[in-house]
Length: 145
Image 1: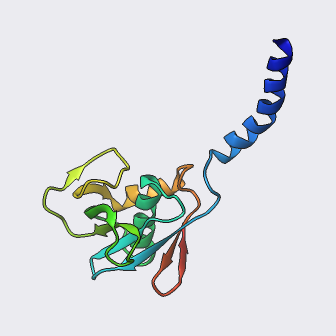
Image 2 (image 1 turned 45 degrees about the vertical axis):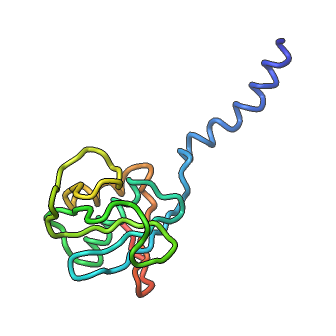
């Protein structure tokens, strides 16, 4: 029995530190963002991105591509089949108020109307899960925090 415990410890201990350092997150997540109109754009899900990374990408795009820092971001169309990239999943964001808008502490992207301030969405880029998010615009530019 003691041999089995020692073997388990030998196998587990060296990998624990590496897993904690990485927080099980990829080093770099690049999310395509496509313009829909002057106020709306779609973040395309990629690289296993979750809600935090998608909101971060929306905040980054709003600040760096649209030049907006104040106001709110709304989910116009929740996560589902992409409108601008056939065969992919996406989330459509807008800077214009939408019907049924609501504030939430959740960083999910599955409910239309969910609202974050632009600065809050951009601030999510500082979290461990989103600190290395980049945005690739339609013209191929890479936007980073």
